[in-house]
Every structure is written in C-alpha cells, then in structure tokens.
Image (cartoon, helix red, strand yellow):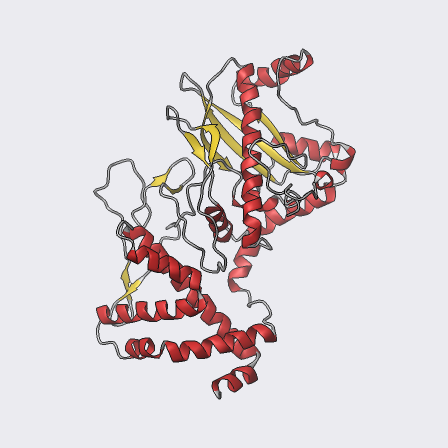
Length: 421
C-alpha cells in the first residue's frame, strides 16, 4: 500500500502516545453505561458496581476495572470489536523501546490495531479511516513516539542523565505551546497537528516535563509501496517533532538557551532541532495546517451537533439490503421476539432480551456477536469482558435497527415489497 503518512491526524486523534492500555469506559456523566431494568421497565442499577472494599488508593470504573493513573484508562486492555466494526483487527501489541517510570526493566507497550480503532471510535475521530487503514495508522503512531523518545534522550544526555524513563503523558491537541504560537504568528510557520506533554523520571526521582509539537509536511510524503508501514526506527520525512524541556525551572531555561545551542555548534549531540523558520516546502502546508487546527477547535461543537444530527443519506442499495436483513430477522428471531413479548418477570425478561440481542446480532453484527460468544464460552473470561462484549453487541444491534428504521422512512416502497414476499 502507499504512504499513510499524508494523513497523520488519525494517529494523533487517538493520541500519539506510547502505551494506550485500552478504550476507557467512563462514568464521568454520572450515569451507568449499561442499565438493567426491573419488571416495570424502570432502571434497576448498574450491572457491576464499584467495590468499595477495594484497596485504598486504586481507582475503579463502573465495571470494577482498575484505572491506570498515567493515562486514565483501564489497566486491562479492551480488545473487543467496536459496535459498528465490520472487519476483524489484530489484537497483537508491540513493545516499545521507551522505559516505563517506576519500574525496573519494563517498557511501555503500544496499543494494538483493535485498541487504536476503539480509541478513534470512542473519541469520534474515525472520520474516513477504515479498518484497512488501521495497521498503517498504528505503525506511524509507534514510529512517531520512538522518534520523540530519541529526541528526549538527546536532551537528557545533555543534562548528564543516562537512564531516563517516561513516567506519564498527556495529549493537548487544542492547546498551542508558546513556541508554536510564536513561530506561527511571527514567522508564518504551519500549526502543529498535535501537542503532547511527557513527564520524564530521572534516577534520583526528579521529573522533567517535555513539550512536543508534531508537524506534518505533506510534500515530503512517499508514495512508494510499503511506505505507510514504517518500522519503529525508520525515518518518515513527512513527520516532524519539536521536542524540548518545558521551562518550569531555571535549569531547563539554561539547557534551551545555552547548553543545547553550544552542543549543536560543537557537534556534541545527536539532537535534531526543528528550525524556527519553516522550509519552503513546509510553508506551503500553512493553509492546510490552519484548516486542521480549525477542525480541532471545532471538534467539541461538532461532536455535540452530531449527537442530534439526522442520519446520513441512505442509498437505495443499502435500503434494499436492510429490508432483506430485517425480513430475515423477523423469521429467524421470531421465537426470541415472542418470548420477550410474553416474559413475566424481570429475570425472564432479561434472559429473553439477551436471546433476542444475540439472535439479531448474529444477523446484523457478526463480529460483535462472535466476540460475545467467545467471552461466554471461554472458561477464564472475567465478568468485565462479558459485560463490555454484551454492551457493544447491544449498541451495534440498536444502531442497525435505527438505520433500518431510517431506511424504511426513506424508501417505504422497498420495505413494503420485501414484507410481501
């Protein structure tokens, strides 16, 4: 395949960080992601409650999953298919070369393609990215982080530190760093497509914050086959990183103002500085970078609008396919539908609802259905995985049913013809 480096924003959207541990299941809204219903149809409560007797100091989400404080994500990776996913993705994870803070020999682990896809879906950043693009996006993501760490190491070596470790990180895509702001407004430098802050831990326990701006020069993108799948150490000319310690202390100011310029002049460092003034090719991407920045700033508003937006246009071909699958569902899932309509108590209704969801899921959401079946049949599967598998299958079935309803409204004649067959 050709280069995917011309679209690095997908990698940044999920967070260009070394070790995502999974897509978080957040309870920040104060509600419960999956509600049980009592006999009268009223919410009965969360299926899994936080264990108040858990070890003090550990934070858990509503599925009783311990949360990793370094990235606010479940400590156990979520490798389940997303609700709308149609193609299987790899769950294999690659070990980085970046040492992890507060450990002896451990390094950060990069997210798998499935985890990365889940993160894009969760953040509403999937855009035009398809399942077939994810391997390339992950390869670029990992490559960017290895390159960033190499730059961090150069700064640390200048400070006399030979064993730095990455303690934690945070993405700040909507915040311009002072340097990026100065370069843009004073020198017409393109805007970064992402910004991150990394906290590095030294041997004596002290920490240093690094600011990283990520830039993209589309004119340097390669179209050679395989260029979109770089190794961890391969150089990608179209992706540039501007790494420097934050001026949180006088020592960092001295490093940036005097020590690094001197080391560069005397060829005593392998640090690769990104010039203040943009190259001619990079300056040609100014308009595109400003558009990306505007999109980032408008993202929250767009996400809110999308919640209430009408569904995208449905083609006649899709409506015909939906009508056919809806007819199949009416035939193959009739027993489950009848059982749900005639259930007598909460337990019976819950079982009937699960049976119908599984039946419809087998027709409409085979990938999510298979993930649930696997979680139910494996002897060592924990309850958290089963709960999330069921939630994703339910979400997928619900989305498919809503899509069929929209198609029926747009093409009533197709559905009328199908149901008369």
